[in-house]
Length: 249
Image (cartoon, rainbow, N blue to C red; front, side):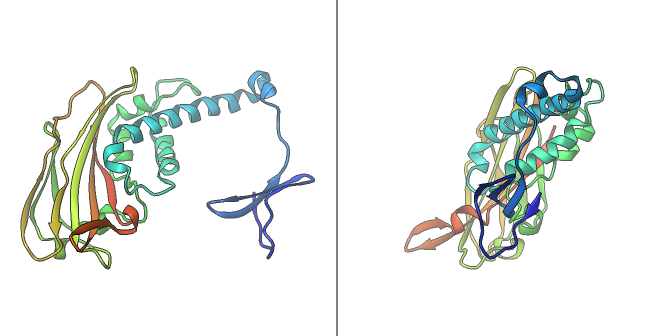
């Protein structure tokens, strides 16, 4: 696939070339391809069918994870978070070493310690990475889902954007049984702090403790606000918010 470099950018089809715009810029590719019926039935495309089957599995699983955590991640995820999560899940899928090619499952990969480790640290907003934004050490209590930050001093412990007057901290969890697709989830109330030198002992407690027979995901979120005449406004509509998967078990 090539990138258009001319001054005039084209969208559409011209003879055997298709011109289109993507997030990476104006692109061009060859027109044509193999019919869907041939891909479904021709033995020569067995590997393609296997890849399509597993791609569908990753897409379904990724959507399930994102939907289960939507109450926390909806305001701040970058436009490519879904595709980046899909890429991470492709690595998790490889940790399923028991299923045949084309039948491998993300859920089986996540049942391994290696698979879980591949998702810990995933940032839903690549423009604002949690480890760069939050300098404080936090602890996670898995049974309760609580996230604790001792001696949190916002002005010292945050890399905050210009114009931010306040921050909020929030955590949430979801438990997904990838065999039955059963989902349980909960989140903590937002804790708001003035960005100053006041020391705070922060305890973020989900309203319901983690439960379920599946894989548990815990996310931590830092949001930035501006106080203008008593009204709080998210900076860049949440573009500076940091949201990370901090625990998978």
